[in-house]
Amino acid sequence: MSLSIRNQLPGTVTAVTTGEVMATVKVRLASGQELTAAVTVDAVRDLGLAEGSTVQALVKSTEVALATGAVDGLSIRNRIPGTVAEVATGGAMAGVKVEVADGALTAAITADAAAELGLTAGSPVVALIKSTEVSLAAA
Image (cartoon, rainbow, N blue to C red; front, side, top):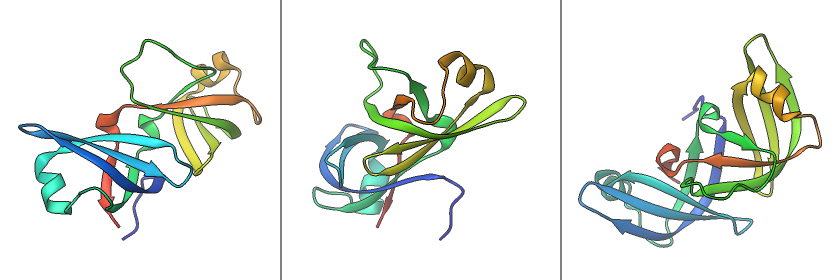
């Protein structure tokens, strides 16, 4: 199946914590970076997610925020350091490709934000992704 979701990172489930309706699933990427996904308990069951399961973590580019340094005091679980590889700016939006230890991420941010952050190739950044915006696919 082909998807329009640009950010697809393979990993292995290291923990599943279930609640009444939602669950958190921790996924270790090849680099050792850990991602947290918040998905429904039904999804955990339907996908057969358990420790050791192989998954693809999927994140739409519009759900990736960028910071130019470490950020404290946020509830955002997923903070992935990287380096800007390319910035494509249009009238309203910018597509920013970020090289990370596990490949690349794409962030769709406003052109104003890209300019204010001074993003250019080689800029160090931290990709910020809320756990509720990480989808999982069974591999």
